Amino acid sequence: MELDLHNPLTIHQFDGGVLSLFANESEHMPSPISFQSSELRFAVRRRAISLISHAKFSYKLDPLLVYLAVNYIDRFISKHVILEKRPWISHILVVACLSLAAKMRNSDLSVILTDLSREEGFDFDARSVQRMESIILATLQWRMRSITPFSFLRYFLSFLEIEDSSLTQALIHRASDIIFNVQHVLKILEYNPSTIAASALLCAIQDLMPQRISFSLSAISSCEYLNQDRLLECLGSMQEIVAAECAEPNPRASESCTLTPTSVLDRQCGDKTAASSKSPHH
Image (cartoon, rainbow, N blue to C red; front, side, top):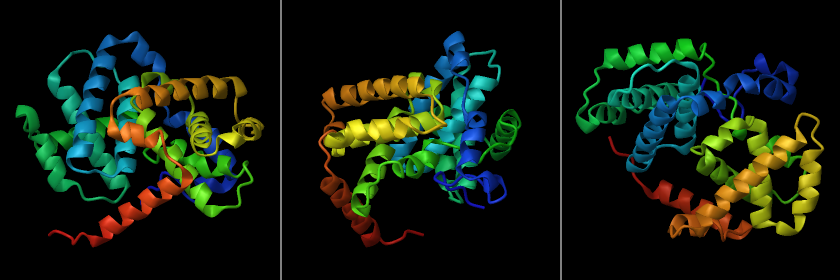
């Protein structure tokens, strides 16, 4: 069954409704303490994030697939003992995690993964990649249907009493952009996926409908499954990250900092039109 990051649990797993997501989310988180206590783990992660970001933009990979792969990378690095600093470790880890994420998302990345396996002077054969996949699966205890912040966005949106579907779509789109953009930040690994989702949605509200931020913060904070102190901490960190990106001389960052509900929807429509106009390549 293809993994939908917005609805990651199977029907059997979701018997408890949204409570199942909150009850199981900690099993899909890395341990931030592991990164803080090991410079080697930090170095491997930093290199892996750089490699996967390069692949994302070079091959125009599905952002959700890349997010899932980085989730696997973070969880693996935080649980697996890395004894040596070898340049190939980050590289084969990226290839294997992208391969696993592609299988979970029912995406064919075979050609891209072959190219990635041969970049920077490396040449990982299929058996080496499969062996790495097996190590990752064992380390993560086969928990590959990751519960991520995307799994909670619509739940928290239901607290806001917004009837305009175009506005809810714009908020989800903006919150998703923020979640993608903060994944590389080590500080964010300290928070549960649900807390990250709630914080990203509040940042999106602050961007697109600032007049409702006080009401929205109060409404979302009323969720019995959220720790309010942790929510405020995460929200503060996320606001700093978003503000820093807006201050950078980056056209993409500047654009995301001046979005309105209309401009978000216009961009979505433009993306869909451009995608539909492309003919498939075989």
